[in-house]
Image 1: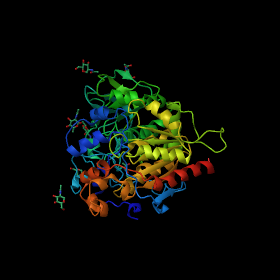
Image 2 (image 1 turned 180 degrees about the vertical axis):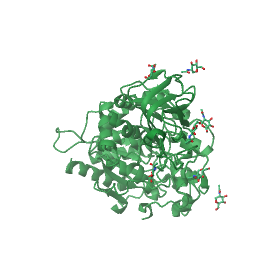
Image 3 (image 1 turned 180 degrees about the horizontal axis):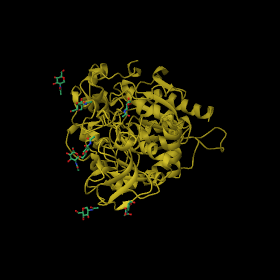
Image 4 (image 1 turned 45 degrees about the vertical axis):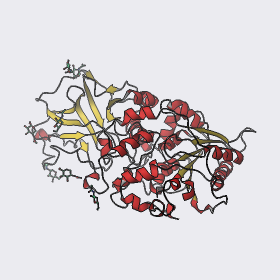
Length: 521
Ligand SMILES: *[C@@H]1O[C@H](CO)[C@@H](O)[C@H](O)[C@H]1NC(C)=O
Ligand SMILES: *[C@@H]1O[C@H](CO)[C@@H](O)[C@H](O)[C@H]1NC(C)=O
Ligand SMILES: *[C@@H]1O[C@H](CO)[C@@H](O)[C@H](O)[C@H]1NC(C)=O
Ligand SMILES: *[C@@H]1O[C@H](CO)[C@@H](O)[C@H](O)[C@H]1NC(C)=O
Ligand SMILES: *[C@@H]1O[C@H](CO)[C@@H](O)[C@H](O)[C@H]1NC(C)=O
Ligand SMILES: *[C@@H]1O[C@H](CO)[C@@H](O)[C@H](O)[C@H]1NC(C)=O
Ligand SMILES: *[C@@H]1O[C@H](CO)[C@@H](O)[C@H](O)[C@H]1NC(C)=O
């Protein structure tokens, strides 16, 4: 079956990834992407992502009434190896952002190249510092495909508003390396459209005798400087690009760390304040608007990250895992349920099933019918749209459930609020989207000790059948659409497509989930 085939990017992988707009913010982001207008995504996101009533038109024509072969319903066990594939290939496939400037075959799409060493550590005399001073490590590491990071120790002075730079004052002789770097502290550097929305910061080393600004504040704890620009506002990116990487970077300091944030937005800070206060005991410094000179002994500029929504414990400091992030989340939002429904619980209770009911694109067209079927199967059903503003409220709704069903999209990111051993069912639309479905949501869900089922819809369940004849290559040859680049791919498969689930074909998946809840918990 074609849909189960693993995705291989046809041309520039980037073209594929950059078209993948997922999310509660899909409407707005897609608009930006498709219109190529340089409109502030963040602004639009707010406007479009307020909770709206999920309109499910009940005009769904029932599809074929025969239950199809189970072969397309893939039940993935948690035992699936995720470690072997831990490192994303450095080709941008993991990218889920949008790009308004990147064509599938334009060569400048591979790697962002505006962060570069200006006067970097390329001289051959690193270890020849005067007076026998020890060799200093280069301030920055730009070698990773996903992120640039600078880890500095010494006399560090940060002047955000006035000078927009981070300075390391060196005390040793004139032969020590002079360094000058420019960095955008957001861990998705292969995504030009994201990085375009991240403020570049200059990092330089200064001689002691050179003009270094006087310290306004001396900090006794280390600092972490990062950006909440980029694709922030899309809940997938909020977690994959900032919150999980921040947890990885800040975790080892146990709160004794000062955050300095550039591209701050009030609503974002408000929304995720519970994480920030868990991870740091100090008020955040607003880099862009703070006129003071902040001095530190140790500063990390940038965030560490590996794979989206995953942490490799073998690489993370102190063996932190994504489960530690889940624990932090439960504590930050006071989520009471740690484990999903289990057989033998209080009599009369049913497992709860949550439909993530997207309001914009990739809707469940016949939600009422599907909800009715789910009740017949034996669930207490909740159907709701993620709440853009009130994360805490929505997190509690999710945490009260045992099964989550959603069409591929950022709303699925909310699975991190589910109790352990709950079941995530991703409904994957047409279009050979298996690769992104697995990498952005399937693998992360399993990494969080959730059980994962994937339902690849049949052609009959796609509303694309109302837009294109059945012999159209949209159905016959999705790869040819992929080859046309992200613009077309995103437009066809992610924007035009809604899902009308065939309740007879989908029912076995809900039955399987129920069986799993009974089996082992
Ligand atoms: C991409 O390739 C196609 C055909 O190979 C060509 O017609 C088109 O102009 C190219 N686009 C860019 C942006 O290079
Ligand atoms: C980045 O730009 C520099 C100078 O323009 C160039 O030498 C280098 O090859 C580029 N690197 C990449 C990865 O494109
Ligand atoms: C510098 O390091 C190289 C090897 O890393 C070594 O061969 C050389 O002797 C060192 N020079 C000094 C002055 O220490
Ligand atoms: C940062 O460095 C770049 C490249 O050297 C320079 O053009 C720019 O003016 C610098 N910005 C600030 C604020 O110093
Ligand atoms: C570093 O800069 C200082 C002052 O501009 C200069 O005197 C010194 O020679 C430079 N050192 C190196 C290794 O380039
Ligand atoms: C910060 O520390 C430096 C060096 O110890 C000291 O000279 C300076 O007065 C201090 N500044 C403030 C504002 O405490
Ligand atoms: C930053 O600039 C403002 C306005 O130019 C000035 O009043 C303030 O003293 C400066 N702050 C520092 C620490 O230099």
